Image (cartoon, rainbow, N blue to C red; front, side, top):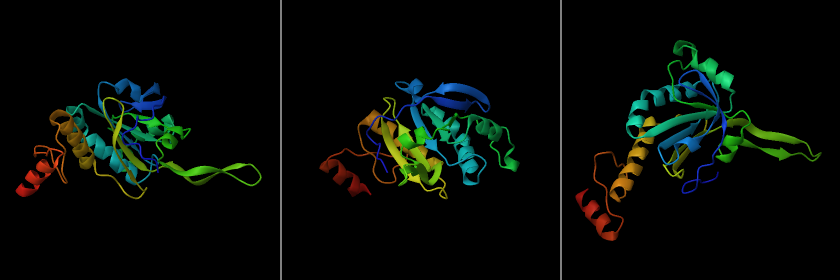
Length: 210
């Protein structure tokens, strides 16, 4: 599994569905560089079981991300038409109607591969033919990308394990706190708490209070 933290986030241009049902071509993260933070998260497939709970959970906290100048972008290997159908299916029927965050179509699986979250890989057989080993869908990868387009946090869950949206918010808060104050965030840090200076004196002072 590639570690992208500290590196430029792989850019892409792909079809996407935005605002709950609007098709766009050549959707790119490049539009946010220099302007906004990005939470980019991958999920396995539309019309599944854990996936709708995650998209609905991110949608429920979308205003909190927006307050932090952060956009949330989802991505799976489904087509834009599958995304559109899912977005227009009622929640009681397994859909995600009401979700407005952008959902990218990685039909070619190249975006998932570039972020190294594809649950398998292509291999050559002895006869020279190519086959895919594993399941050609994305794992539950999440990447926090700063305004310079650099990945600052990543976490990868296996397919059965849903993510914690509040933890994604906490990581945005922690990054912005560090950028604004120059202090680092200790274990279990929450917005509104003090940080500490990244030196021996700062650590000693923090630990003496806790």
